[in-house]
Length: 423
Image (cartoon, rainbow, N blue to C red):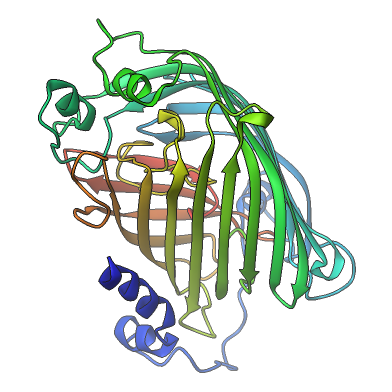
């Protein structure tokens, strides 16, 4: 366990010039004062050029109005998604050090029968004195389920073998899902915040419509842990410490983001069972070039660890269960899961066109968890990797349309479409 933790911190503490010497063969770290700047070009400029061929791209601004757009996405978990989405980004006040505030709302439907609506925000008040983060969700979900653990057979009984499911036979769980979460952070020092909040996660009418009996991982886990298989609530309090120096929330070129939190689920606020979780979210970005700052090495580590109590099956941390549901490209959501979960990813981002309209990424990730039946955290790892294309959607907020193809084990692979970087 310690060697893997040490490896992560060594990677995070590596100096940028090490990466630049490895990946950049020419000296792009020096300012090039002879090069004529190229104006950035985004989707709005493309549409404007088609409608008015002689028009020029608009300059980058420090704020962006609300931008409605089609909400088109695809990944193996949800199928093909279509809907409407609106995003906004703006710096509040006149302090140049204030971080950009972002908000989004969407309503969509997918080919797998998922109906999903949400409203989210991440707001920094002038001077970053306060940071407000929250989300409201109402959805009809269809969740693929591939059992508990990291893909190794554990236990002696037939129920144990079904629960850990080493062949990754898929089940599908249907449910109604509602989420209310809000955190308020106070800046106590430059870039350092402490915060608290609440989160209510509610699932109703849970059913496996394809199951011929109750011998599926979901039903076995729920029976053993004392949960009603049809509905539950996981309600609790959040306490977090956040440190951020990244230059942009949507697509950082440099800086760091770290958030360490404790979640305490309590029955007296409606939670089906009590639980205490520790969560970690650490991201580090190095720009490899002054001339082309879009050459970036990005590292991400996300973890969740249950210290006491019990979690419902669908709330267990795992693949794609981070706040933005973007981890584990190569696998469907919750492909691997357990009470304790550790995930790491490295990504190289690079420009393709001089006007920044097209760029690309390559990435590699690993994850590990345990199954409570013998396989422990860090005993076994599951890798995945791939590459992707980026289309600059909004140059004011550095918003990208993302098209990724990733491959994992057990024949897992797929196309992942989304808005903004995975981390």
